[in-house]
Length: 399
Picture 1 (tube, rainbow, N blue to C red):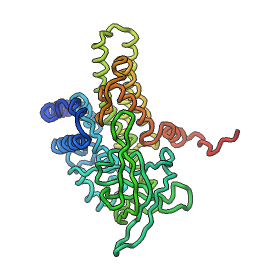
Picture 2: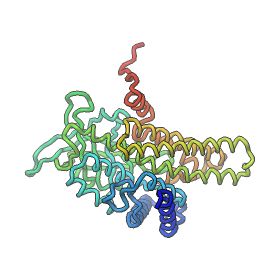
Picture 3: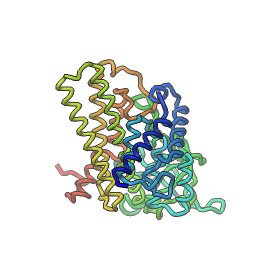
Picture 4: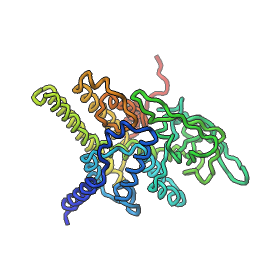
């Protein structure tokens, strides 16, 4: 069987499965859901994908549905975009960020303990950013002290985290803490796995501009984390965090980029609905958007191919991240322009998708992607300094 025949057979297989299993009418039902109902709908859809073998095609082959090639993953994501399936907002930290951390840096015991639970529905969030340590993540202040309590070695954690996606529904947390203040600020950081139900963990959802509560802040007061729930060596957590962030900037966005290609149908629908099929200016702008989405998909393809072949460069994930955030902005802005004044007064959504076809909400939400996973400016510095080997940005400007 040729590769082309295999991929076409896979496409038909996925398409047939989605025709029978993809949730129908989810866009309308999501808009009427409470937060708790949304979370349950997300869990149900994820479990459906797990049973079908399409939840984690990027995981190794020993896991259900894993071991897929770049071409196979692309087919799966393209068919999900074609079928207009819901974005897995609740589980993406679990299946991408947490899983990548375990695969690259976790012990065999941690993999055996946590990876099966992810497929069973255990939800993870990320405790990296702080009120004064966002783009400059290495400046984090949340402190962890290693002590012995009741005969157990634990880290006692105190501090605050912010911008943690869906933390109010999370079971576990990927947590960065400071265990030493000696040396450069990247040193002294340790990577922990925290139980979100542990005593001393408080979560407060943040009300966002588009009407949802996707992000949260966390307050940690004498929270105990067992030493065995440390990933990597003490004071070496910065290196571990790069595996997590690389996934956030690359693998996560690969799926979303393909989904954006499928969402072009909503812009085309606006063009037809407004009778502007012959408007040269509109067709020009739409054509440019299609080209930009195609180029973003090509960049995502190359990123994953580099990772599979073991030739991924520092900066590759940053290119994917910056490309996606820019194209998402262009997509939602064109839809907002075509929708006219009525689109600017539609009711806000509660969670949902990045491409809801609620254009004002999508446009406002697109700004978050220029910051999430590291701001555009930070990504440009990574590309210029670590990929292109340009001169490092001065720490202080002299006027």
